[in-house]
Structure formats: structure tokens, C-alpha cells
Length: 105
Image 1 (cartoon, rainbow, N blue to C red):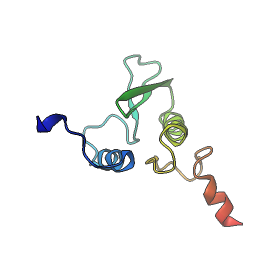
Image 2 (image 1 turned 45 degrees about the vertical axis):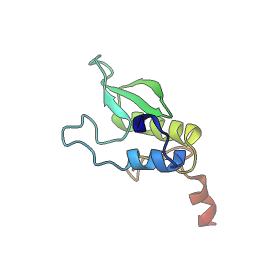
Image 3 (image 1 turned 180 degrees about the horizontal axis):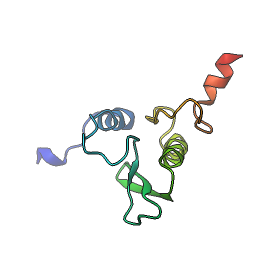
Image 4 (image 1 turned 90 degrees about the vertical axis):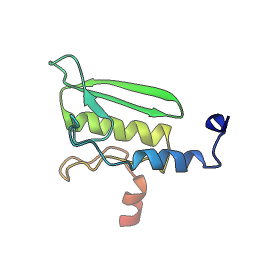
């Protein structure tokens, strides 16, 4: 019976516990939410799970573009506590942490 009891953790705590697990050493991509696609012409697919739902956001040729799409989607769906990918400095994530722009002023 104890298997089916809900914990007292908030959605944020449950998400962050899962999101901060160590990455597998044999991961296809170095970015969170970017997985191998079966079509070699578009090798990167974006997907993630949140609150029991699987979100599939399409296939991409570029790994960094797929990571950007993931960042934008999790900010919209999960909210401010979403764990984002660290993108290269020369390719900033769109809409990522708008508060960073406000703090520069």
C-alpha cells in the first residue's frame, strides 16, 4: 500500500530531484532534453517529461538549436524553477531568464 501514497514534496521539489540526477556517461547529446532521433537526416529530437506527460517538441539538425527549443519550452511549461541547458556564449538562449537582462540595467 505504501507504494501508492503521494509524498509531501511539492511539484518543484520532485522535478528538481529528478532534474539534478547525474547524466549518463553514454548520453547521445550533452544537452538536457535532446535525444537521438531515428532519422539520420535530423539526428536530434527534443523531448521531456513533466507531471506524467511526455512533451515531444520535434526533430532538429543542429544540437544547439534543439537545446534552445528545450530551454524555451521548459520555461513556458515548468516555470521559473526549470533546469536549463548551458548554451555556448555566442549563441544565447531566446527568452531565457529575462531577469538577467533587467539586472544588467
